[in-house]
Amino acid sequence: MKKLLLTMLVAAAAFGQRAPSQAKVLTRAEFDNLLAKPGEVLLIDVRRPDEVKDIGGFPAYFSIQIGDLEKNLSWIPRERTIITISNHATRGGQAADILAKNGFKVAGTIGAQTYEEQGGKLTKLVPPPPRPANRETAVTEKK
Image (cartoon, rainbow, N blue to C red):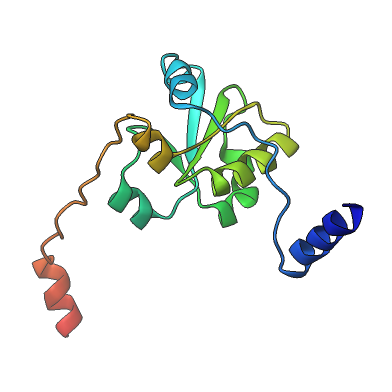
């Protein structure tokens, strides 16, 4: 048994897999209870903008992709309890671990798609229509 576990750990390391997140994966009910206190929580969505647009999200959140999180820590308010969001809580868990390691109070993470599968309602975002070209800009660019 010990040999099997050791083999699995070595294989995971060889394939560059990360250790499982320490973050609590919130249920829909836990998430909804936290959202009932909007002045106390901060949602950080670590998905790409196209994922938020295609899948949906929540009405108010910070959008910081996971790869940009550590260099943007100074912009994140420390007085709020943070909930991280990804599609199925994997990247959200990684983000929660980064935040907790840096002294932020983290309630946990949730997957937007998981939340919706559990009966939660996501906000579907419609991108704004393209802006018409500015006539002055078009004239200037032709010169």
